[in-house]
Structure formats: C-alpha cells, structure tokens
Image (tube, rainbow, N blue to C red; front, side, top):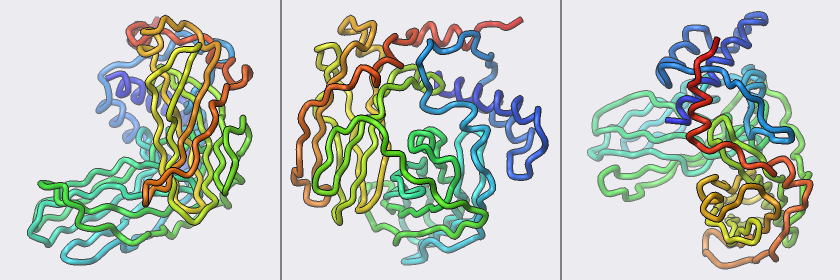
Length: 341
C-alpha cells in the first residue's frame, strides 16, 4: 500500500509541475496522469518535511519530470514460431510505471503460456522490467513491458538510446520453459548517444575484467522509506557472471541483506542492497556508523566461483548521507496521509 500511495503522489506532483510549463507533445496528457493517480490511491498529500540534510533519494520527482520522452519506435516483430507471435507495437511513457513497450501477443498453440523477461539492457545496463503476460490458447492481447523509473535512476539513465531484450516463454500450468526469443534490439528514433558510464565511487573489486564499485548509501523514501547501498558493476569478460553480496555488517552486526545481479558479457549494472529499518531496529541500530560488505562473483552458466572479495569497509563519506535512519513505516504513512491546509 505504501508503494501505491507514494507512486500516486509522484504522479500527482508530476502533473502539477508539468502544468507550470509549456505543453510537451511527448508527455502524458492530464487525463492520463489523473487516471493513474485515481487507480493508485484515493487520497494523497504532499510531504510536509524535507529529507534530513545529506539524505538523497534513489529516484526523485525531478528525475521523473525531466526524463526524455522524445525517443519513439515503429512496430517491429519480436517472435513468430510454433504458433506464438509477439510484436513490439509502440513505445509509451507511463507517468508512474516509466517507459513502456506495448507488446501484441497471439497464442495459436494448445497451451496456456506465460511470458516473462529473460534479460533486458538499456544503454548497455542490465535492467529488470516489469513484464508478466499470461495468455490462453487461441487468444490474443496487448500487454505492457514497463521499465521502471527506479531502475533507470539507479543507472543514471535519463534517455533511452539503446534497448535490447529477450523474453522467456513458459507453460503457465507446469512452469516448464518452452524457449526464449532471440535477442531483439529495438529500432528507436529521436535518440541521443548514451552517456559515458559513471565509474565514480569506492572500488571494491577490479580483476580479470570484472569491476565492483560502491556508490554509497542513499534513501528510497519515495518507494521504500529505507536505506540502500548502491553498487555499480562491470562485466568486461566473455562470460555471463553473477555478483552477489555474501556478508553485510552494520555497526559490527551481521545484517540479512542480499543482492544478486546477473551480467551478460560486456554489460554493466547498478543494483542496491536494501537496509530495511525493521532489520536495523532488531539490532538496536539508530545510525549507520560503519558498513562492511563482501561479494562473491560466479560464472553464471556453470555456477563456478570466480572470486570472493575481501571485506570492504565503506568510507565515512559514503555513509554520511544516511547516517540518520529515517522515520519508521508507521510515521511515514502518517505523514503521507496528514491533512493539508
């Protein structure tokens, strides 16, 4: 519920910001935004307090409002085999869900099918879109594949330049994997060259073509109301690898917090390790004084270990922005629903 309220708030504030400027033919209409808000929540209010000094959201309203909505695409085929036809119809910009690829699906097989993401890259970054299509035999439909603003903000992507994806096809009753679509690279128009990757931060690992860089602690008050440790990763090898944290220690206490990221050859990703307030409360942690993390790197195809990093202590400068733990969920919800004058 908290996520729905905050997403609705984001859309509502987006509408008020857009109303102050000139009309942009690439943005959503007032009716679209209003409908999105109505579906997400029945009532919202603007926050009455600013985040504590030094605290930063993973995704901000400014990021959403200024995201480039110029790139577009023409209809193009995705898959046509064994009675299943998939077509990418259009690229739309949902005010809440983010850039959305509308997929046309026709199932002429005799099986109930489930279609999910196999992998998606945006501007060379691995991104996990929201796509979960169920379709019965002999039916056709249109369904969205949404690329969240949260995932784009984490990778600091402000405009779509290159989008490539593959979809996994399953039997929806048995979850048997029937196959995957070949890689599909969307033909986009109105794009800009992708920005150079930001490799700033604290180096945690750099060997044999793999780099792991800590970006520091941020807050996710819009969607999570908790703290996250941002991690940048590069795979410059010819293998598909996985990077996961094997241990996380906060103020000397072991915290259950996991991140598992798959990187295709010569791709990048930015992921986060969630530091939930409830977990920190269990250990009596009111401020993040020290954070130590260890990573494991594996060959994803053969699941063989490649390396294990030493425990890396986050530099004080990386911890400072989240030194004060935000208010708990109950207080955050009270603030979100408080009446305004």
